[in-house]
Image (cartoon, rainbow, N blue to C red; front, side, top):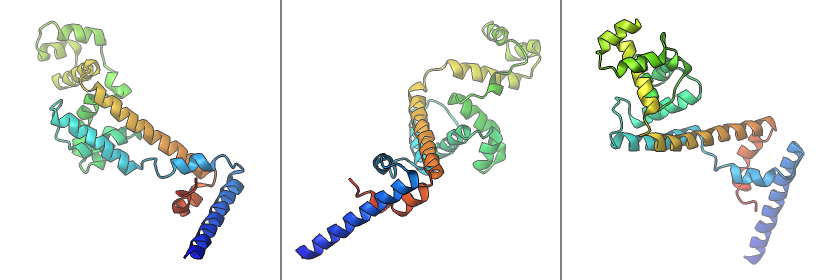
Length: 211
């Protein structure tokens, strides 16, 4: 038995050396192997990140901080879609119903995931804020500003959510998760550019033992 264990250890050591040589030859660097070993397998994939965001969303909804027909996983999809540069209609389509675009837009604003278009008002923002505080009806204010009451309510929603700090602690957590996502994509993209990604995927189990 001792002889068998020694043989296995020798084979394992030999295999590790082959792997080290492989990555060294591909990258031209020996220093990259150790950090890579620590990174690969710990960076979260898109599904894992979406699940983590969904858990935070569940907390927000359970606390009653805002009402929406979207479920936690839908909201997580919304967040990821926003960070991927998708518009509200595209995100709604991802959720299976393009008619959800307005629901998506309101939830997005509630989560302070603003777009430049949200603030492109056909009137001075300061004027709208003064009128909203004047006690006039939405109908009268919308008539004075030259927009429909529904459009005015959307602009008011944007301003209100921009100022509301209720969700800020949760949104910071979501931001941290999404920054991890960006880091994952950056690193895996770098590995692919170095020609290392395929090699790592093929030998992940062996690399886990390198110390």
